[in-house]
Every structure is written in structure tokens, then in C-alpha cells.
Image (cartoon, rainbow, N blue to C red):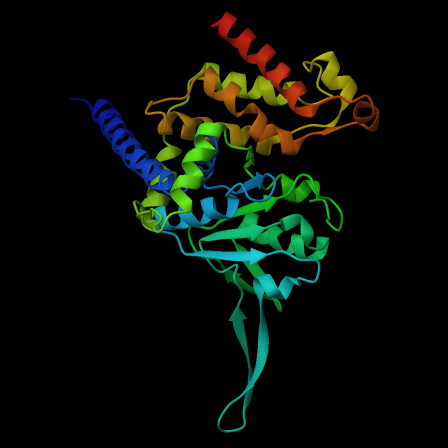
Length: 340
């Protein structure tokens, strides 16, 4: 047997084993976060891809409960920060304090903030001031923070899941485009259907609640993230990703007319990177060895929505950005399938 063939068989075996472990993790999450399978799959995909997620939904839909459950199931050290207008950067990152020793000597000691964890829940992130929001930027991208000129590495792995209320905007600060782009995916958390809501109230208002069980360790998650990057992606899927991202840029000649007229700015190369990782994770969660065109279509909206903006005229006309992205994705993936 050739080394190349043996290596391919080893990769298939590893992917299949990881798929089984992910299925076990999904079952454990479902014990505390009932229904909303798409939301669970997107959050797991973000973790497997090594990125951060933005959870958007009205209060009371279980966003905090989901992230808390994830930290248990994935074996990660979790921390939660409730963002408020008076929150300061030092409240997140930590600060240096001057201490006096028994001999009277004085020295600065760094006290770590809650960001020194493996899974950070930034609750209602848009309620904090831009100065505090920007304190997360370096941490999310570089996995380190700088305090008093000193660099401090964060834990590994390090993920941020932020929540945002899309309705109440009074007293909030919109996230800057640079920070939005750091989120691998935007996950819309919708109201559950009637049957799911019935199951929720029966499961959570009794004498006992089901508990999630740990499935992964931090080291196993890091290994899964490395394996994900080794998954093969066909040339046709790569071309679809490029075609889709470039079709959403208003200054690209391949963009549809409605994108050129209604979109102020479109996704950059980081969006293509995010799609490349997320389609692999989607295939892995679905028990497949490689992603396909359906994965690109399904992930177009959560990956691209927060990386695009409509023009003022388009907003005045009532153009819906989500519908525009979906029409563009349908056009691109449909054309790609026809060519294949």
C-alpha cells in the first residue's frame, strides 16, 4: 500500500471518529438547549473552525444558556462579562496594581481579567462603549492583550461568543465594522416553534433539569481544529466560495446589478476564509468527508450578513440585506451546479 493511500485512509478514519464524537456532543447540548438545531450546528462549526460567533436574538431565547452549555460539553474554561455603558477596558483585560511587600518594597503585579479564559461570553456586547468594545479586538484576532506595554498571551483555545439584542437600540453602541469582521459567523436565534417551546417549558420548570456532560477536552478541540483544516475541499466548491464572496462586492464586475446599486461595502478575503472553514465544519457535523455546494449556499447568510452594508438609498427603499444575499447565493450556487 502506498504512503499516499495509507495517509488518505488514516485521514478518513480520523474524520469519521471525530464525526462520532461531535454527534455525542450535539446530544449532550440538546439536553439543556432544546431544539434550535441550526443554531447549535453553527456554534459548533464556529468552535471547530477556531473562530468567534455573534449570537443575535431577543432576550429569553437561551443564548447565555447555550454558551454555558458549550463550555461544559467542550471542556473549556468559561467566563461571562455583562457589558454595560460604564464597563471599562480594565474590567475585561485586567490591570496592574501596586503592592507593598513585608519588607516595604513596592512592585506592580498584574491581575488578570475575565478575558483570560477559553470560552468568553460577551453578553449584550453593544451596550458597552466603543472604547471597551475595542479592547476585545486584539484579543479576538491576536489571542493576546497588551497591558502597560507588556504582552500577555491568552489561553488556548480562545473563543468569544457575543450576544446582541436586535430590537432595543436605545443606549447601545453599534459594533464597528472592524470588530464585526472578527466574528467568523453571525447566528440569528429565532423563536422556537410550538412543539419545541412545549418541550422547553416541560423540561425546565420541573423539580430537576437535565445536565450536560463533558464530551471534549480543550486539547481534543484543538486537535479537531487542526484536523478540520486537513479536510479536502473540491475545486468546484472553492470556486463557488470565491464567486459568492466576489459577487457580494459592489465594485466587482461580476456582481449582480442589485448588489452594485444597493450595497455600500462588501465582504473581504476574511469572509472567504470563514466560508472555507465553515463549509468543512458543516460537512463534518453532517457526517460527510468533504463539503459541497449546498454547504456554501446554507452558510452564505450567517457568514456574509455582518460583513456587508446597504447604502442609505437602499435602506430608505426598504431593501432587505438578507434577501439580497440569499438571491445572490442562489444565483451563484445554481450557476456553479449547472456548470458542474
